[in-house]
Image (cartoon, rainbow, N blue to C red; front, side, top):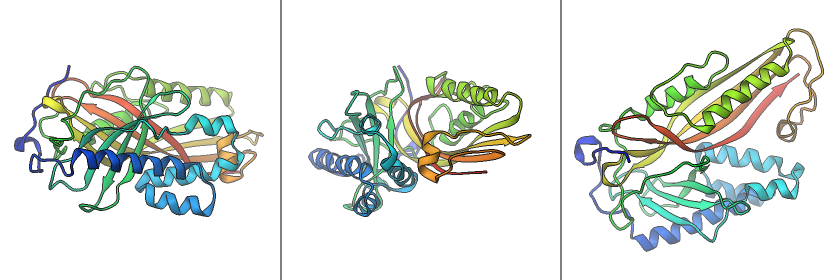
Length: 307
């Protein structure tokens, strides 16, 4: 379905053997996903300490923000976000010599059975693996196979041999979903996430009834990791963006913020302005030719202000 080349000519740096045995990768992934799932639903100080060991980077910031809202969430809301821990499957393992070491695993949402991609990274050989990305797959999205865990998957490297550089694909996504004035792109295929973001931004702007202005910016922060796909089929890349939503009212008016903002910040009413900051983590499949496509994503409000 997709095509690309792998090998030393396109950034491969590993030795061609996996960073660990397939059995070790499976037990490691199962343990790491279980730690992430359990700590995500623990609002106690012990839960915070557990998340420090289970997550890293933007994923840790997002997990801590979500945990802060747990006391105000219903049992049903918590259940919707709970990860299954009994069906973790290793999709790919990085090769020996590549840093950081990576395991790409798949689990599901416990309630719905929807697929979730989990990128696990370890900074040192034999070091603890932590979740750098936990991204539910988009409706109807598909991921081509990676090389078997017994062989290991090549690193993305500098992105040579791919249709577009990961950084360029990320920038194209950010520009295509900003509000107002999104920039159309041919780099990325249409996907439900991008359309949802554009529709949501328009709806929020229209809800102000010309009494204020709404803007939304998506700031690319960089690539978190990823691996080349089997048979030269391109690569899957995990990347981080920060979304900033801003509301500025022309005249004071009483607005009720979303429940998540209130739970995270304590803000119960907005009259003149508001600024919201969210972590967005996306998984993008980039082929050797043709359009890249977003296959999975997560979105978590991490900070906000208002008055």
